[in-house]
Length: 272
Image (cartoon, one colour):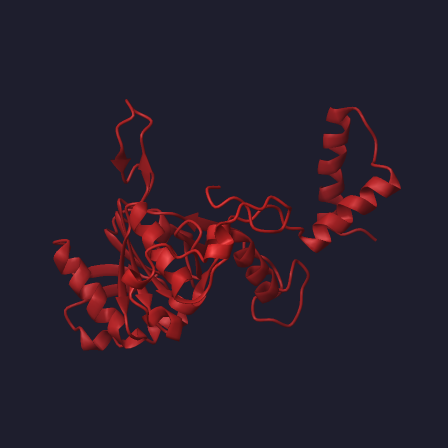
C-alpha cells in the first residue's frame, strides 16, 4: 500500500508528465536515472579544491576575506568567548547576542566573560548579533554550510545585522561535493535509521559566502541587503594543519593541480 508521500510524489510527477505531454519513462531510461541518483557522479571539480592540510585552511580564510567577511583564528574552543567579546568591542557593538542552542556552543566557558549577555534561542527581528554554529566550511569559495535543525536555527543566519560563526578547522572541506557526501553519510540518506538525526536530510541547508550584499540598484554595492551586513568567523584551530601561518601558503595549490584537466570527476582548469 502506497504511503501518503508516495502518492503525493506520483501526483506531482504525473502533473509534470502531462505538462510535457508524455507518459512514464521507458524502463531503460528510468534505470539510468535511478542509477545516477544513487551513485552521485562527479562533474568537473576545480583544481583549487583539490588540496589538503594547511593550504586548504589558508584558501578558506583567503576566500572568506575576499567576500568581505573577517576571520579570527583561535587556538582552542576555550578561547572563543574572549574572541567574541573582543570582536564586539572592536565593532562598537553591545556585548549582547543570541546564541544557537548547539551543545558545542553551550559547552564553551562563557562564564569567563561575565560582561557578555546572551539568550539561547532562535533569532528575532530585534536581535543585533547572533553566534551560530557552522557545520562545515568549503575552501573552494570560503562558504559556510549551515544545515537547519533545532540546534542551528536558520533565523540566526538572516535576521541579525552581525553574524559570528564558530567553525572548527577540522570541519573545512575542499569542495561542495565533499560537504554533500559528508551530510549524506552523517544523516544516513533519506530513509529512517538509528542515527541521532532520525535518518532524514535537513529541511534546509544554507550556504553563506560572506555578508549579505547586493548591487541591484545603480550597481552600487550595499552590504546587509538581505541579511547580516557583517560576517565574522572564529576559526578554532583544532587540527595540526591549521597551525601553519597563512604567509606560508601564498598560492595554496600544488604544482600538479595547476594543470588544466577537463575529464568529469577530475581536476578542472584552475581558473574555473
